[in-house]
Amino acid sequence: MNKHSTTKPPVWYWVVSVLALLWNLMGVMNYLGTAFMKEAIKAEMTAAQVELMENTPAWVTAAFAIAVWFGAAGCIGLLLRKKWAKSVLGFSLIGVLVQTGYGFFMTNATEVYGKTEAVIIPLMVITIAILLVFFARLSERKTWIA
Image: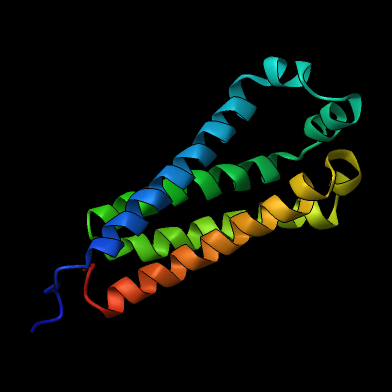
């Protein structure tokens, strides 16, 4: 077997890849909503939440964009069985860590949003991003992607 040949992935590979893409597409929709429907979103927020959103630096918004767009692209790469999916998902993880790091350490998000939105959900996002990188690494080792 040469370096570029692949083996047929199991059914669960496809299930995980599709679910991961759907997860990341939800992130894309969240990003698009935040970027383009700010007034509609602000109408449903408290004054403290609006202030936190309006004071978010551009570099955090960029990290958010990298996290979701690279995550979706990486999952598409998994579905196409492309080796570059691993690197793209790695960049997505970096975006997730930058964005959530800002929320954890540089804001009062826990006070503004509560523990579920400010801690539990971001930790879940980090965990899934890490698992996707490990999934891509496993897929490469098993030669499901090339």
